[in-house]
Length: 312
Image 1 (tube, rainbow, N blue to C red):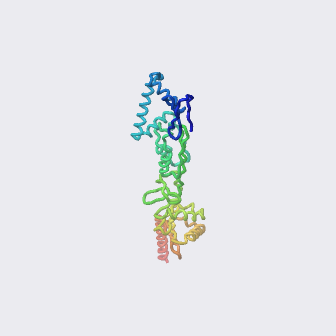
Image 2: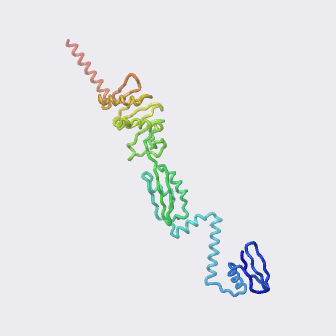
Image 3: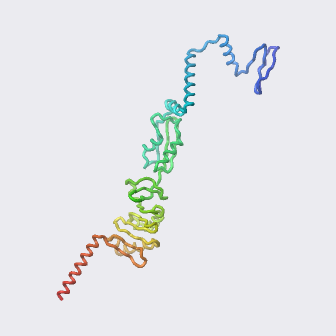
């Protein structure tokens, strides 16, 4: 707490508020130091002894219009627009966007979600909102968006990892190992991924594919994994042969099939299916062409046998 005291003898002390005091003397006031300059200026204005600075009227008018504009922007809800416009033209317009980590998400898609228009201000840009919009893109697992002043936006993408192609009906989509759908499959570098077909294949597929990889030579020949009635698997080989596995004991069935193929080259013949669903036998069905050839060969054999019998 402080007070200014006059050197005049005849003075009366008065208190104003709890924070400061002033001294009253000769019918006037002695003001605190921080208020004296303004008090002197007001007194000179009252006595007409004050010369305003050059262009004071112009500056006052500009201040009035600026105040009116600010009030109008706040009252009309245009504060963000004003901030964007002012800061963008003051050197804070986004001039450089650094995008990292994207292979399947195009730069154009990312820029569209950020919403740049050439005069977007880095000050007024909502990084959290931009991050949420980019994270909603199909391939994006996670994303960080950072503002680097004065004019750079840094976008770091982590993309989702496709595990297989899932066929459901006539549609093909890429799925993660968890079974979550990523995006429609349109070919390209993911064409070599395993093809899962049928309901329940995306849930049971990863574990079954991992087991099949224990016999890598046979696994490399498999093109598609077909889930039948969500109970068992059919394997479609790259040469078109279908292997019908039993509901249980798939590992033993595959081991027996591999041993039989190594012994007789079964999977290299003109066959359509190998049915292993029966515990006591293995059923092989020929391709239509092979069946026709076999039927013709049998007829020829019967014909030769008939001619031989007639000669006897």
